[in-house]
Image (cartoon, rainbow, N blue to C red; front, side, top):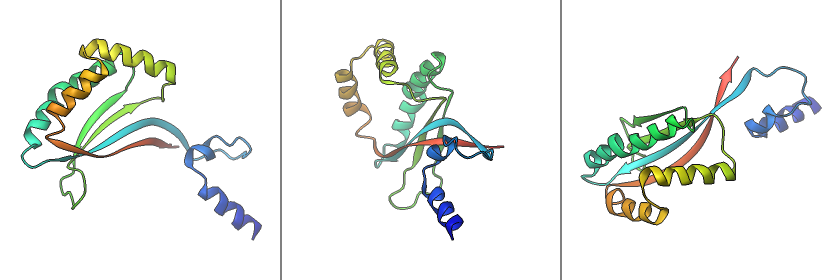
Length: 149
């Protein structure tokens, strides 16, 4: 009974916590991998083509900039080919090795602002003007790869 309770308690722990627990001598059957930020986008009526034009130009250019700096490993766009009611039409995905600390986030934000030649206020105004009429952000999730041994 005690073993069953211990197994249930371990199963309830988040994956990242159980990875870091050095008290267990057995080797794990996986190692933690890269992180993925996944944003679900729902197109507004008539907005799909224009929004995808923006993704194929501006978003891609921004991702390539981040990749050239070593901030991200990769990025992808996936279509939900059979979206059910309330589900996103596409997913914008960005892969990176680790989560930057606050100081690194500030350095990257400054470099990114210089790259796009806009401060945060200008970027918000541009988004409200160009992308907001075309889509709704339904969700953003951070996932971590689990590399099986």
